[in-house]
Length: 233
Image 1 (tube, rainbow, N blue to C red):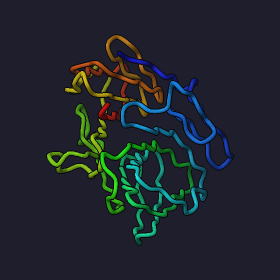
Image 2 (image 1 turned 60 degrees about the vertical axis):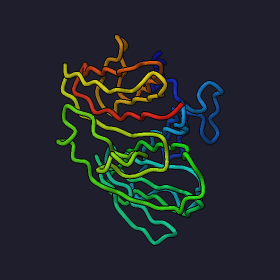
Image 3 (image 1 turned 90 degrees about the horizontal axis):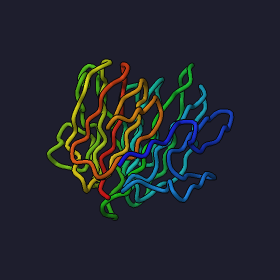
Image 4 (image 1 turned 90 degrees about the vertical axis):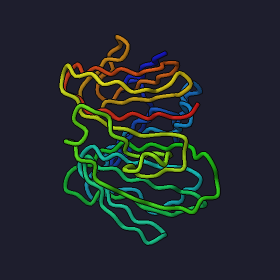
């Protein structure tokens, strides 16, 4: 099953400094048919104006993954972590028992991010934050695991969830397969370009909610950059 959620159909808000689109119910946007997809609870497509951002605010019991599409995001938190995550790179914050953090665009150009929230498999973990580069060349023509709740994904940023976040860059005409499993839920968004899944086109920044597919085959209709979440039901 594939449910295409076009970019035009997404909820969202324009706050001036922040232009936000929500693949799932979030803040003032509520759609009972789009509350979560398996353990994936939030997928926000945010554009943050230069020298603006989110002031310190709390989170708990959520795995928060930020994929920077353009520009950079600067993070600070109550654990003393500070870091700048650039385009193509990923940061993960496991909110655990509670953390206070801020996220700012300190750049001279707008920053564009995907921010994903995945529900943790357990509660009571100590909070933590981490970031790392994932060069696009390493993702050329193949899926690379960016964040994972599984020990065997040693190169990925760790999360406390029964889930993986993966990324790939594809040239037009390239195909990749991913062994999803029919009991799993996947959500795929092309950051740029368009792809085809089971004969269905998914354009840039559209969402594809996928289930009951043993092997997921993705074909690039154009040069494309994709982000994929594989989550428990």
